[in-house]
Length: 141
Image (cartoon, rainbow, N blue to C red; front, side, top):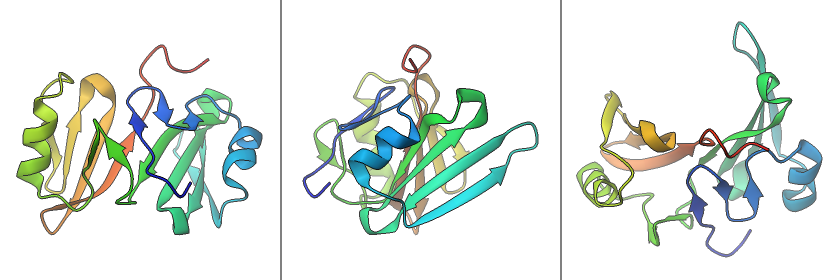
């Protein structure tokens, strides 16, 4: 994954579709550098971390452990043709509000979400540090 990867909202990352199995992901990215098992109370989630790539992937029990959430911190990743990681919060929100994906809602002091497309943005020191998104209703196979 050396070239810029494009986020496809609701669908996945350019070569990582939501709904992929762990075997399919492993065939594309290789083995993760770290694996976390997370108890969400009513279900389990498994997180695969590829720290060198700046990407984390989540596989939830309720989705038969298929890929259901992607988080990226890599500046090479693009959304709507633009590299957003490292941009200031107001610039990111202004740009995304013009993309026909709904309006930004503050999630926390460091986060913004776009509910319509399952997109979450996490800021650190006023700059975009991480983009997280999941499938829209029809994306999981």
